[in-house]
Image (cartoon, rainbow, N blue to C red; front, side):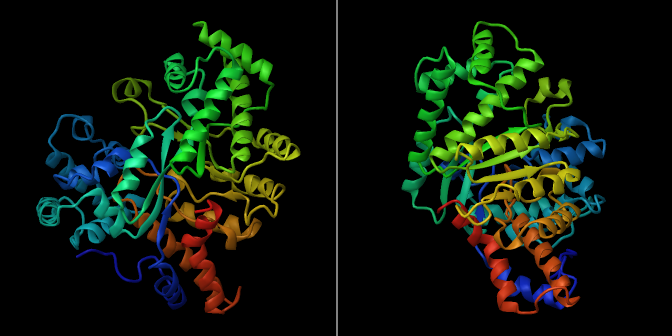
Length: 462
């Protein structure tokens, strides 16, 4: 039997009462994920549990590599069943890893399977889950609606096909799907194939020879995103670069479009200006900005060449760019162009630096205009979430927090919201029982409900 019980992660009666009375049944707003929108539109039934559970999930791939599993059984040509059985074997002793919890909860929530995941039970779990999939004809729509998801934002590059979102709306699902505008491939001027990305953008907008052309093209595409429901944008940088001038960015762009490679200094010059331009543009159209800081990507160049991007070879950067972030915010604020911004920080040693900086730029435009996003990626675990809540309550205001997201490519990731909700209720319940805060359940319960769903609905003007 599964070790996941009703009081999982809830260490006090008060925590139990908060979770089951206020958090458990709140809808989900997944305001940042990487689900493929075409898969949601096509809504095809899944063939087996591997296809739903392991395909494309680099969190799980990374855990298997840590156990010394051959890549053939991770992303190679081994059968779906062989890969699934191998993952169960690996997971059986991954004590303390969030996947050890998430996978067990996913098994119970989506397939009604109570067996503990390990090597001994792997074959039986494979058979039971596949029988459930066949009997219930599981589709993306059923998984999302069954998870009580009301809104989700995918993450889309500026030149992605947006007709998919119009077609999804016509389906009449019980949830909305909208794209978040992401211009990283246009910002990352040092990337191989950069000129090809600019050409793809030009095909949908106008010829791009100058920085003015590029800015006009980006604004054109942002308006196209807004027409299909976009409320959010996304920026991912290892570090925030200094804000530079349009003229300096122009020089770098012309050099690269002419076929040359930019230096590190030129790359940062261009990124610094484009980050500023994009945030100013988002402010103009009242688009919230989700800024992800601190991921050092593609560390293993051999595996990057073999498997491509987003396959589990990123890590936490130790780069500190808090001064540059301060100057970026200050410049935008002076120009009345600082958009609603959620900062996702991957390096926990920077929690309080970022939190205290955010407090310098709040306003009455929105409750929690500048947000400290939830524990993200490598911090998306019990230890990381607890530290995040301690830092958030110590230096900010928890009642305006926009809560959890999945940041996932997997349709089975929605129990992560309940994982967070249990930790949130345990954190607040512990303070209530220790007499460190009010014991008024109605007041605390309203804050819990707001963090789970209502605050994000208000923040993104849904």
